[in-house]
Length: 350
Image (cartoon, rainbow, N blue to C red):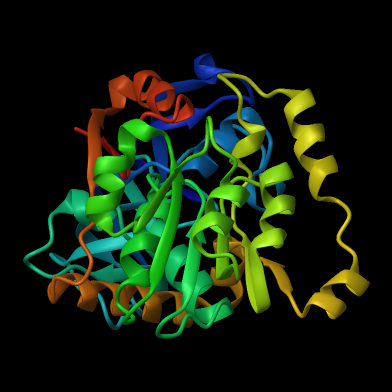
């Protein structure tokens, strides 16, 4: 795409795969505005574990290579619209997302269908916590899992962005019981958020803990970890239960990519027996919001709009763990790598 050399955006650029030193703040050319695009003055940017995968070179959508402006979601003010934009106007406050990156910037060009107008009661920070985490949680619980009244759910990493969202979304359905793993220091907050049975993943065996309370098992497991935790979760599924793989955080062991942890995690998940699935009547599946959104952009926007309505009516409440200036991007990344966050971390362009 040609660039508009008259406009520069201040963004966090990934220069190469690696450690924290590969991220830097630069003034970058703003892409030309297409006829179905909008130009957004970004006010808040969401951080996700997938940003760590991208920085370390473990995974980027479509194998995109550096250099590129990082980030896949945020909020801001529309300051310009393309000639064929119909649903967004200049002055609108919007949530926006792009799985080809570019959101950690002061200015972002975003397709119209990747934007949703924010209600007046929603802050920029809260809006930046919604698209990726809440859409992932909603589509896995209800789109894949078909969550129903009275069912039981295990959420791995219940204090993380997706886990926090999934816990709240479980309780928009009546009489759902939630098991949630986290460190004990986070139990108070996860219980307030709706986890009925918190489990210390560091010192306790989560399979034994769930079975001691619910011997018959659970209906849905939402797994953000992968590796042996994913494989062992199948022991907890009831007949017709769903185990949904949505993340690979067990591959992250520090600042830099660990080949050992990557291969270990892959090896522990590579063998799934179709015969065992048939005999146990289990569904084991995966979900990637980026590829889903590319093929179903209208459904993604519809889900974000549904979640916005849930926010307006007070049925979900995103938790902002912390806010960081662009200049604090290394400290913010360390905070997430070390699993210190509860809920969403936000980057502020200015």
